[in-house]
Amino acid sequence: MRSAGVLYVCLAALALAACGGGSSSGSGATAPGTSRLVVGYDREPDTLNRFSTHILEDIESCVVEGLVTTNEKMEIVPLLAASVPTLENGGVVLREDGGMDVTWRLRPEVKWHDGTPHTSADVKFTVEAINSPAYNPESTDGFDRITSVDTPDPLTAVLHYQEIYAPYALQFVRGTLPKHVLEGRDIDTANDYNRAPLGTGPYKVAEWKSGEYIRLEAAPNYWRGAQFPAIKTLLFTFIPNTNTRINQLKSGEVDMVVMFPWDKYREVAAIPGVAVYKIDGNGYEHVTLNQRAFPAFGDVRVRQALTHAIDRSLISTTILEGLAPVTHGPVQPVSWAHNPKVRHYAFDPVRAAALLDEAGWRDSNGDGVRDKDGQRFSFTLITQAGFAVRENVAQVLQRQFKDVGVAAAVQLHDGTSISKLWFEGKFHAMLHWWQLPADPELALFFAKDRMPPAGRNINYVSDDALTTLVYAADRTVSQAERTRILGEAQARIADLAIEIPLYGVTKLDAVPARLKGFTGNPTNTGPFWNVHAWTLE
Image (cartoon, rainbow, N blue to C red; front, side):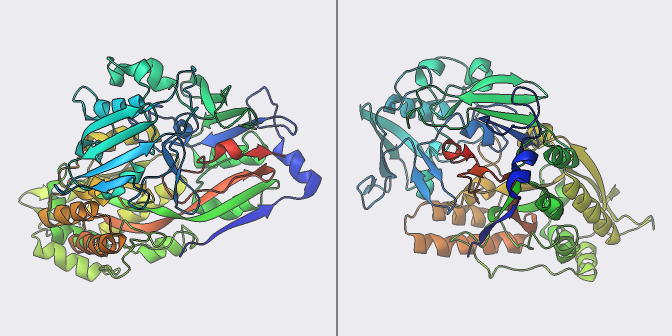
């Protein structure tokens, strides 16, 4: 179901010359023979604490490793854990009271960057910290189902869940918090950690120059061996504007641009010395409809009307050049849980208008905008500034909403501030994407008790039937049964038109052709999942 390919566009000596367009000590890209990689990154992180950030964790994952990670095949593989616990290997035990016990056995000889051993005490501390009311993490989902943690020895942590939690294998994909650094402290304000976290990964934070870049340097005594990582410096430069990132890739000021927009594919593929990796992503672009901030979205007829008003095929084939296929829900075809038979909303402005009429929204004064009880149907759609393709899509949405009598004002925000806005629910509608993990997390996004800060239900949907389904899927370890239940949940999401799904995320990563070991990744684990293995030839 997943297709992945790589297009190499480089020619021998010319490629090496083009890849080395900068100085190894300046702000430009890496010269041949050096061990430095400059990444043009679309936004500055809000924090480097993996449990607190609202942004993809590409930079953080180079520093703080999880007990597991997800590879390019969407397989969950051990990292700091010696193995992934399962029913078959005895790591997972289902109790008669309906709960479960999960035993994590840690890899020996792993140390934090300061030389302190990484132990089961850090696992226990992480659970207790995330569940503490004194800390405000990005999500508590999964952790709040753990009642206690036993640590019979430094390399064994036994987690006791109050109920079966099927996505347990990804519980610590974000890693652990160092107990010896954070115990007894206010983690939200521990800026020494949040800006330069202590980790076990191949890199450590050397410098964060706000508004400009984050520089990572190879961590000494990395547990995999002295030969890792081969690339000694990673420089993430913050370049919010898409065109600027691509121009700097052309000029050699940056070596690498990950997840660049689809409308730039042909342009980037033509750059000498650059390899473009293309992989079907486990994520989707959509319009979130905040029912709490804009009550009109609380009417299912209104949501269905807005979905019918959008010509998604036109957007996919023109603006996106066919690289981002139309999608009809949050679970994509690359996932084992995908349900292809959910309700599809055809582009049908006539049906959209009829539904809005039925919901009581009519243009009573002839100004072209529908109204009801003295309120105009006018809302604000926010999206990321500098992301040209997204800005273009937002303009199309605005025009097509207008065609059915709905006024949408487009507002642009930089990538860091927009993440804060969604977490705080301070928006009407938002055009954005979710990058999903290998194991579906529908409860996190759609359960009624997973509104921020407990989760990512930023549609603020409160549907008992859907909540029952997504939690039922979490409470069985049978993949066949989970597939059935998650299929029903996807059908419910589509019937309710909770959000407007637009298209699937095809991931495009531009890297130096001489970079070896890069594979890309379809999940929210991100392309840096195996950065320790990268080499520059």
